[in-house]
Amino acid sequence: MGSVCELREVGYTYPGAKTPALAGISLRIAPGAWVALLGSNGSGKSTLARIFNALLVPTQGSSIVCGWDTGKEEHHAAVRREVCMVFQNPENQIVAATVEEDVAFGPENLGLPSEEIVSRVRWALEVVGLTALSRQPVYALSGGQKQRLAVAGALALRPRCLVLDEATSMLDPQGRADLASVLRELHAEGMTLVSITHRLEEILDCDEVHVLHRGQQVWHGAPLDFFAVPRPEWGVEDPPLWRLWRRLRSGNRIPRTIFPRGKEMAEALCPSR
Image 1 (cartoon, rainbow, N blue to C red):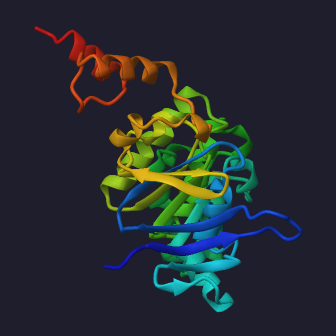
Image 2 (spheres, rainbow, N blue to C red):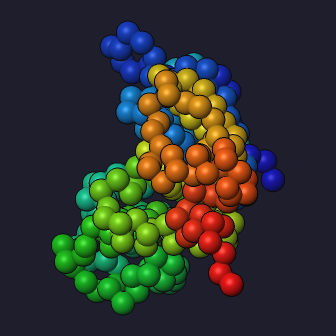
């Protein structure tokens, strides 16, 4: 199977802007991959996210998504069915009064038979763990539940790829943990995921990392390699646990295969007997 998304020297300049938001971006996202996009504010992450599902069309270069050239407007509807987005604020994506009505909104707009809509809604709610709340009014949900509802609404369209643009930034720790669990299950089942984030701990489950800085791609590779790369000019700061991890690894106190997770580091330093 070909790539889910292939960008070739993509650039994008917003109308009236003097400098491009993106310049010379080339990358390929393979089917089933989980890709993290990192960068400081203004690095171009959200612009790139919108390129992936044709909300924005490159002003330079080309974007081929699921075999379709997004430069052609007649392909946009098909691209947006295959690549769905979950944004930072779930309130911006919720359109109905109850949980199941909201999840059904997308399939209904595709004109699917009622039996297929019911099947998709049940499946999507089960995946995100909201089945028991299917009849609940949306206003009664917590922030984490609303974000899971936004994911369910996207999943009901049965996309090939799910793009999450800072989807955890408004969640509390439990909400982030719940959403991370859902994403790990989707990845295990073969769904392609793109996580755009500034929380470095969220890249630990990813297959590869791409870093943007001032609209350009400055690094890409495996998460474990990213941890060891000096990057002061990128505006991507390590959490305290990672700084400790760097010192321990430089002193050969922990193996290179140990990720900067508290539990893994503690077990490596003080193995149970």
